[in-house]
Length: 130
Image 1 (cartoon, rainbow, N blue to C red):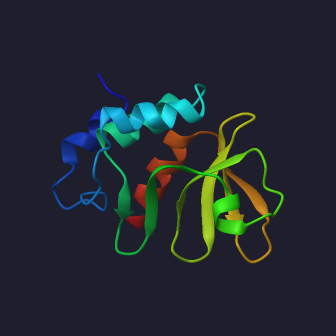
Image 2: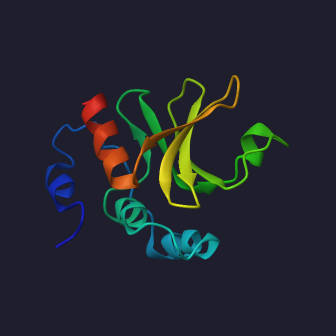
C-alpha cells in the first residue's frame, strides 16, 4: 500500500492535482543522487501523483529540487533545497538538516517553517487549494 493511494484513487476526477504528471523512475533516481536522505514522502509523491501546477495558478511543484542560488543568486540560503512556489514570490523547500518544509519570501528572503514534513505540507496545500 502506497503513501498516497488515497490521492491516486481520486486523481482524474476533477481534483486540483489532476494536471500533475508523474516523474519517471529514472528522474526519481536522478533526484535521489542529490541527497540520499530525501524523504520518502517527497519521492513517492513525485512518482505516484506527479509534478506541475496544483489548482489554477495556485502552486507549482517542480520535477526536482533547485538550489536557491539559481533563483536568488548569491544570497545566504545554504542548507535549503527548493521544490515549489506559489506563483506569488514565495518558494518552498526542504531545510536539509531535518527535512522540514520551509517557505522563503522573495522580497526579504525570510525563511519560515511551514510543515514538519513533505506529506503534511502537500496534503495541506491540496486541501487549501481544493
